[in-house]
Figure: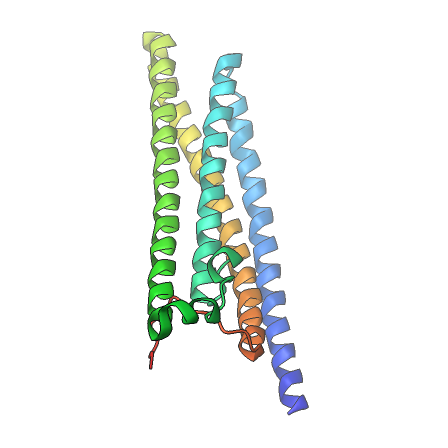
Length: 212
């Protein structure tokens, strides 16, 4: 029994190590390529207000992806039966005296509604920042074309293509970072759930159950 647990521990540790090494390797490549794109952008002589606009665009994207990260972690908590305490801090016995056999069903439905509200809130925030991001991009491009002379329109188009490439790579790098964190959190939550199953505390789950 001990040998099996030791082998399982070594196997999981090896998986974690390989995941971390691969992530760090790709992260380094991403940063190098991103700096190269940024240096190409810097070769264009932009006004200070244009630099500020680009900073604003990247800030919006970063805020959006922070919400995306929170959503991903929240979904992992649902998947791993490890909801935040605000969802799982009410023992069944608290309501059994009031509602009898219906206590489980009532609490389960309340938790599901609360989960749906939380997920919808994340989606609304993500869409808000996506709309804001697209608006800022379009505004920046429109102003860039307006301030360009006729013979500079081609340069403006090239710059916008390069900028969108940079922003796309920036976005993908942060998403890969979030996915790596998601994998690490998943392992942690699974272990917590296994320990929780050994506890005697009775908690109503949001998943379908056979209620007698």
